[in-house]
Amino acid sequence: MSIRTAEERQREIVRAARATGSVDVTALAAELGVAKETVRRDLRALEDHGLVRRTHGGAYPVESAGFETTLAFRATSHVPEKRRIAASAAELLGDAETVFVDEGFTPQLIAEALPRDRPLTVVTASLPVAGALAEAEADGISVLLLGGRVRSGTLATVDHWTTKMLAGFVVDLAYIGANGISREHGLTTPDPAVSEVKAQAIRAARRTVFAGVHTKFGAVSFCRFAEIGTLEAIVTSTLLPTAEAHRYSLLGPQVIRV
Image (cartoon, rainbow, N blue to C red; front, side, top):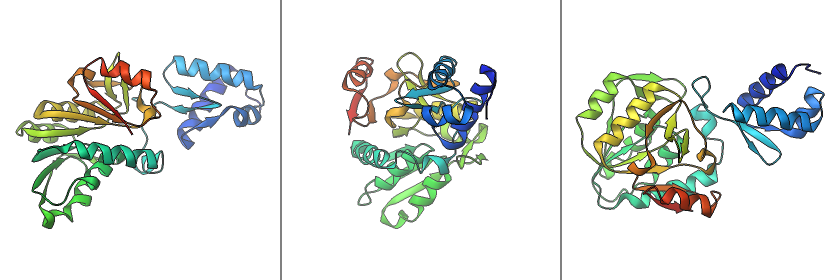
């Protein structure tokens, strides 16, 4: 299949990246009937427009106001890395007795890694998090699910019901996720309704910990909900370069790489 204009090619590349989670330069060149250098040029242009992030030999889509991965997809990508990050994040619990756990797959893994041998109240907007912890109630974990409109892709509640309920709490620790984290733009997410819930959770918390895989760093989505300096800690993996981790730490938070 030969696609003649750059615009048509780039639209097809974005569609493929969003459908499969990543694209490969060699495969795209064969599929589109163009040279690899043409594909690389297209990927550079798409990266400049914030639609993809280039990797060695390919690219993956950036989540934006027009595109967001589902929870089901997130549960299949970078899973070993996410499990290491979640276990390390759960160790930051300290003496917290009340915890907010964000929506998303990594926060869900954090919830599952929380200790079961002490009283703990977990507040969440995530149905999967609430479901995973509900079975642990007998072990001393009490679960409070925030009400609101349920988003189908992430199975989490949003809108004014959710934020109003959150505004009535003071929690010891918030575990927060994001679609992107950058030193310039802070923590971002595609949906304004989700952004409001995350911002309210951070306002309600005495301490805030961000946990996320290395691919989140440098990515920028549509809605900003926090600055880097509001975080006590960032938990990610050793796939984030040491030098870049140090640059984030200069803005305030402890950066933990596992």
